[in-house]
Image 1: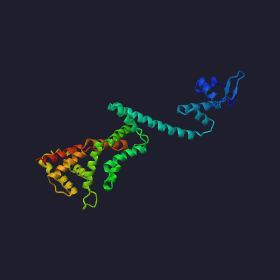
Image 2: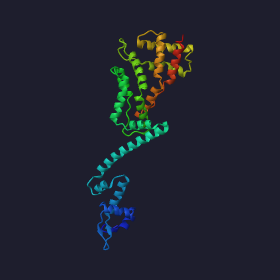
Image 3: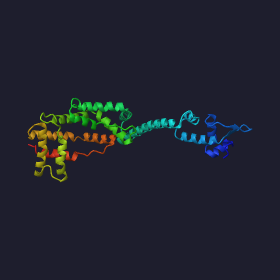
Length: 312
């Protein structure tokens, strides 16, 4: 192609793959100006128009508006600056679309009412500050007055969801359900009772460092028994039960008697609340963690073993 040659709109259309109407539209708006006109008044374009039109088509396919495109081709704006700004805007749009898709999917899966859908939509659109305030309120209700204990600082951090800037749909759905749970007064009360029980286990004056909590002790001692198929009501389980009840007695500074074992059974039933396990599962999804191991089988075994040995 001769650099000094001029081309009609029809020839330009064949070279660029754009329609004559589209090229005329860009020309009328000064994005691709004609270099001259034919004796009959038809527009003629130079070779530079081909490169400009290729750039314009690419930018339009990427979603840039005509005003911005004109500034780019006229070098009033640098292409890297425009690309960065547009990429940021697209990130926001993607996040909004992910949120909408997550809410609609959750509504479809759960058969939600219009009121529930409205709540889910509002929770999904929360800003980072709003999410922190909501979870902060939950943690205050659960740990308020107890959070000074060294053992609870790490627990509070481990129960805090951190939704990514551009979350997956599954993370958004998990966040919405988790937020709903954290607003539930019944769930707050359950977790508060568990926290108070654990605090009581850590306040012995003769314990200079935090001790292994009773749930961990039960898991470590009853877990192998469950795996081995030992019946919790059998004599084989006596020594195992005595081992973790002795640990609980030490934590509370009380004798290992029927009253303590009943209290421990109630404690383990509280920890075994399905809502607690669900919260931890959702938390793992939101934070991108591995799914937590379910303690339900071990806790069920332990509670049964305790109940059998405290019947009158």
